Length: 88
Image 1 (cartoon, rainbow, N blue to C red):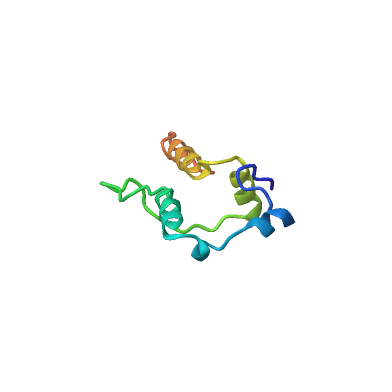
Image 2: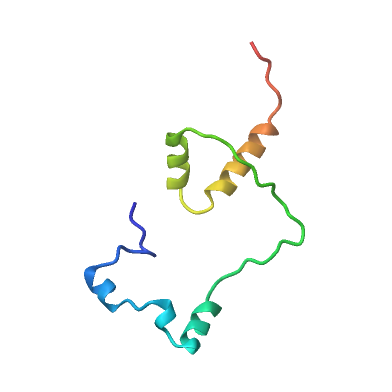
């Protein structure tokens, strides 16, 4: 899978790389401030669960892009809200 936001490093990239610990404290501070934090939720709106799915299903869901878990939630909600059908 190709990720445009995080491309594979080239040999030149590795040569230019500097360890975080080798940066000045000012540079480290600037990088730390770039971290994005969602912060605590005021009222949790969803429950964390674990579910086992077939690898092909998970692969297709992830391939659908960011937000795939929210879309699964939406589809399950729609399915659950459909009128109940008679079982054979």
